[in-house]
Amino acid sequence: MTGVLAAAGTNTDFVAEESLFWILFVAAVSAALAMILVRRAVHCAIMLAIVMLCLATMYAMQGAPFLAFVQIIVYTGAVLMLFLFVLMLIGISSADSITETIKGQRLATGFAAIGLFVLLALGIGHAAIGPAPATTAANGANNLTGLSQLIFTTYVFPFEVTGALLITAAVGAMVLAHRERTSPKPTQRELAARRLASGQLAPDPPPGVYALHDAADRPALLPDGGTSESSVSTALSPRDPNETPRFVPPEETLQITAEEAEREINPATSSGRAES
Amino acid sequence: MSPVHYVALSVILFVIGAVGVLVRRNAIVVFMCIELMLNACNLAFVAFARLHGNLDGQVIAFFVMVVAAAEVVVGLAILMAIYRARRSASVDDANLLKF
Image (cartoon, rainbow over all chains, first blue to last red; front, side, top):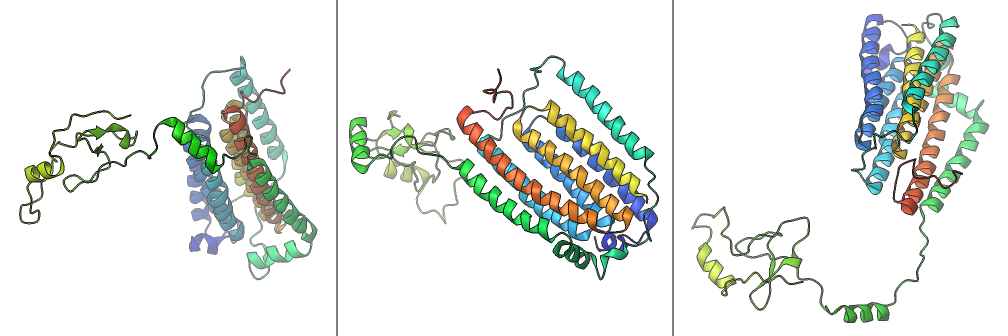
């Protein structure tokens, strides 16, 4: 990275810049293509991160180290994390539907893309773009000094407007993400009445944690010797609490044998009563 | 190395982003493609700043980044509001304004 920053804007290491450019070119274009081709939104986000990192390196190669780091910190760090956060809220497994809802949309999109590409390529091809100047004299002492001089003199008014924009965006996001309560919040008396009406006064029993097998997938033992299936999380499949564990520690560390512990913990053979 | 290569890459990325906006259904992916287009514009701005030997292009790219951040925040908040109301993030399902 320091080599890239040192060579930035000087064109001294021509071959290095050229080879690095083509590597990044292939990486960025293939990642961008993969982004519009993969179905899952999370994979799209990863591909977008690759494109952004490639572009950050290109900024550094072009004498814009400040923008390179802003790109990594703001885009790859903040914006993409925001995307992933919203993806997590909305449903991470939501795959895009492949079916075409508008007939011939893909074909029309292909033609439009080719047209746009030809238009832009012609415009750039007709422009006389010569080689870059050897060094950016506008930088001043360094890139950061030059940028800050421009931002706080020529562009100071847009910079101030940017502050207003950011505040407005933050307030707008809070207003949009705020959820109004459509029904009044239940009082403690109403909650108590609801619990009495449901027939179950106490909360569900927690899963069993025993001396023999301290695992969350063992159903709780009830006072009558049965087991409570509802005590195990639905994400786990409950195991028989009387099953002998596969790993038996050596006798010198564990004083009681498995059979003794079994008899001690659960004297009655479990009937496996399903408690609802 | 001529800045025209960088501009060419930005053109390619911009077109890919535009295709993604037109083709994809998931609103978040559409948003990501818009971000890709903005990034492509930034690359062109930086390349032109280098071409002209001044820093104005870099300042503009900086402002583009700020505006893009604000846009993403508001856009994702809107998306979440729509998802709460419609239980879907597909752009096909938000069709109440369709006549």
